[in-house]
Length: 469
Image 1 (cartoon, rainbow, N blue to C red):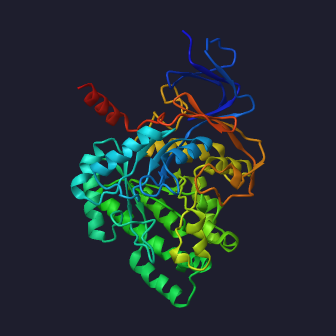
Image 2: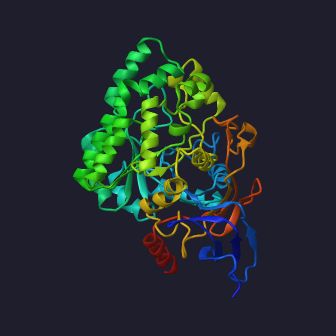
Image 3: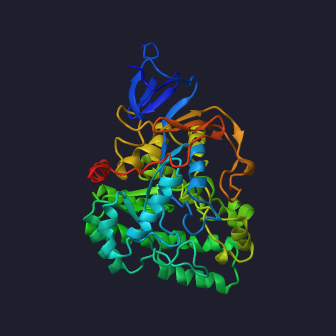
């Protein structure tokens, strides 16, 4: 028998740790891990000598902007960035136009992914229509997403239909989601406190990046901490598995640590901007281009601690592209700017750079970007791991390649990255999705429509049976 592909000579990061082995790929899956002297007929061999062979990133928090905001990005351009960044599976977000809140809008989004996505995909709809929760769950989604926020002075990026603020309403939805077994992603936010804090800042005329940054971090992050306390308590009361987005304060991390110790099914994520783009210097020099959020030094230290000790489970990009025009207004009217930053193209490489700097162990970085998101979002044994039988979603990276990120390399429609000019020490050379190269030698080579729905194995089996009928 001749297998499709042999990746030889690399250091393979497996669930048991790094090992020198060759990876065998056949019919889109990992067929074996063998020593270099084991003879196997292979139609093609990739030399990975001196390289790391890693599982592809499973990014459960991606804003594709399609439909409705394609001037920022779309599914094709987002997944081109994913391929270049070693991301082999993305989960899209519901803050679209129209927002993804029912079977009709979810069907439309699925069809768009199937037509143009280069990498595998899923989508996190908003569960704001009670009667649509179970039907959407049956379509193969692995999670729902909600925002506990109402925008001040703008209607985007948190459009109507995607937000829940009333605690009773939130518990009611958690009860419903709990029956589906899906995970519930929550963007935490205490709207009442934020109304008061924002009002004070704006009354002082501080409609600037510094004013905005200070408001969202005010009183040691009280708007985040109180909201997360509520979510954790309601998760305990409902039995609903929850996932906390945007973890960024010491108290929140401690609260999650306690909740896990108490047996509550909670995961949380760190987005690229928290460890890599959240200093006061970033706010002052990049202004609206650095916001997302400011993370004060003590909280950033807690973030790194939580990443290292496993309290923070997952690294997901929160890729959130906006045009220069949508950002530039923020220098003088920050509450009118669109907040969020692009991140999917460089997050994996930034994590590998952190490994080289001694900030994080390699196995921990791989767990955060690949193994744990796959396990917690219904893809255990299929995605996020290099083991026999798993999809051959693989990344080959040079761990000792110093290079500088520039706007010229950006594959997003917006044409800019907040990391422009930053030099890092590792580079992704190849990305494979189910054994097919989608990025190689500096070029995206994957075909639009190559990506498939990355659903839990049970959902895939049900969908296949339905197709057969």
